[in-house]
Image 1: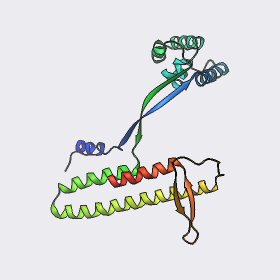
Image 2: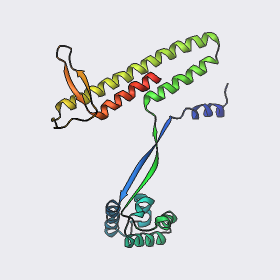
Image 3: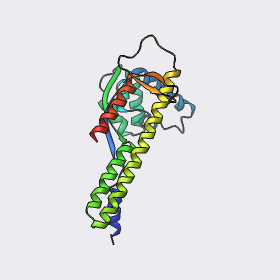
Length: 217
C-alpha cells in the first residue's frame, strides 16, 4: 500500500497543464484618470469606511500609475503614506515621469485546451501501462486507445459545430464591398441544397493551423 504522502504526491503531479503566452498591453492616461476619478467619487460618498490606499492597490497597477498626471500621482502618494501601503509607495517610486501612454509585454498563463490535456493524459497512461504486467498492459492499452478515439470524436464534433455556427453567421451578415485578402470557401447545409460561403481570413487561418497541428500529432 502507498503511504498517504505518496498518494498526495501522485495527485499533485496531475495539475492542469498551463499554456504560457506573452501579450502586449497598453494603458492610456484617459483610462487611468477615469479609474482615479471613480475612486475619488467613492471616497467622497463614504470617507469614513472607504480605505483609499487599499482601493488604489486593488484598482491600479504600477503601469497605470505611470500615465497619471503629476497632481494625481501626488494625491495617490499621499493616500499611500497615510495608509502605510508600501506596495503603492513602491509603484510611485518606480513611476518616473508622467506619460500619456505606456505599453509593456505581460506573461499570461491559461489552462491548456481540453484536447491538449486529453493527449497528455493518454500518453501518461501509456507510460504507466508499459511498467505493469503483460496482461494488465494489454488491457490498459486497449482501453486507452478507445478513450483516445472518444476524445478525438468529441473534439471533431465540437469543431464541426463551431464551424457551422460561424458559417451561419457569415451567411446572415450583410455583404461588404471588399472581401478579406485571405479567405477560403466551404460548402455547408443539407446535401440536396449546398451553399458556398466565404469564411473570414481569421477563421481560414485557424482551420489551416488545426489541420497542420493534427498532421504533426
